[in-house]
View 1 (cartoon, one colour):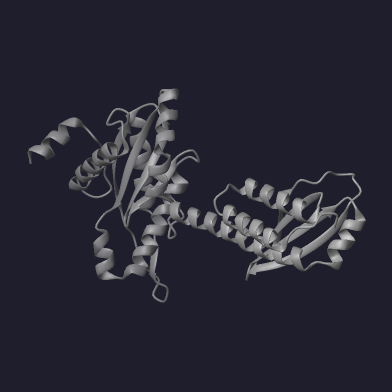
View 2: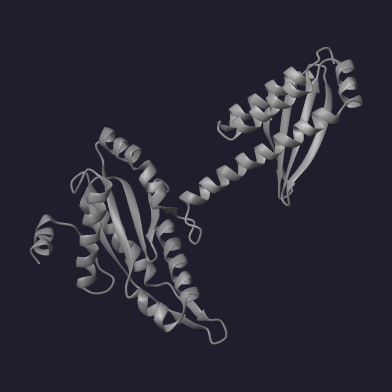
Length: 306
């Protein structure tokens, strides 16, 4: 192959690379793989394809078009629905022929590397799961905690307000008591759908507890705008019919209350603003069903004195 390596050094380098792959960013992973294969097998370029559920995509390619080249292809099924294909590209056909004749090391290498690519794929998938609520598909509190600083910074630069709408289902416990958790999940999923469809793409819908959401309305100019959105969401949800018995077609209709706090008027950190949105929704619920309430310092004083 033009260059020879001690087997112990070869597998030592492969082991080091395999460990490193779990610690680097995606593009760096593929560049590391390319450099390893280039040094040990004298490849010229590399293509990597990922096939998931019969849909194939090119995830790495550093080849040059219109250049005569020769391919060594190796396909690996790393899980039931996931397949990796390595396209090793050689400018020298004699090197390719040598690799084909002595392919044990390169096949073992690609198998080990594919395992680590899959591990990175799983890591990214798990990361998505950790920031996405699995029931509703909304962001969760982990996502909010992670990105809130950049959201605040943007609002300050643009001199815009952010309205925090704390959304709670009225008497949700009664749903669980009368029906079951499956019906409760239906109510929560329907509410998440109404919230996502009722705000702009630039706004955020976050599930913060079992039956409560936080909607972030970005670039709000006036409190009244936030109140208009809140009342629109309240009106939309109370029209929703949730089927609780497919045989009898019995339906359940629920209502929500919303408490509103604004950044930076009501606080400059997330915990303070959420606390004030909690106070506001408490006041809304005290007023009855389908109510919205904007936080005020006067109400804070009442609660603290109480």
